[in-house]
Image (cartoon, rainbow, N blue to C red; front, side, top):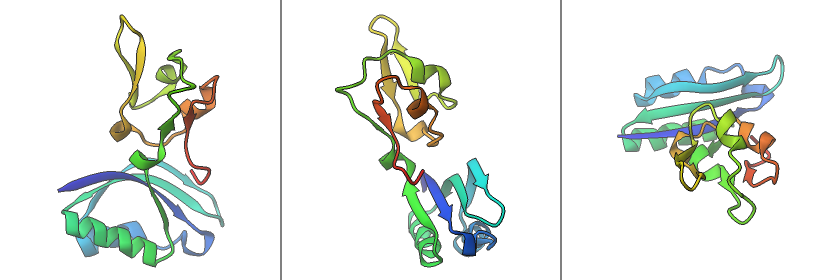
Length: 138
């Protein structure tokens, strides 16, 4: 069994196709919508957690790619520049999933749990030293 968070970008010409529904039916996958931005007559961007058997998962991802969907895996995309971060905690205050958390109150170190991230970008916006980043396509 595999479960990964992905950001799917649907170009305008395929935004109205039921591709996510297709991968559920064709490959026996399930999904949880983490974030959605659907723009009328424009592109759509979905952050989903997709789950299923390993082989089915990768077949479903390939199906989406073959149909023109751009895919980024969230865990591989969120970055923190450790040389810039001074653990101020601004990001902790805005993180809706506790992907950024202070686990040791003595040191006040901010820990990043990439598996919890949904690529909302709030941490990127509030970081005063720009230590947090996501690819531009997010």
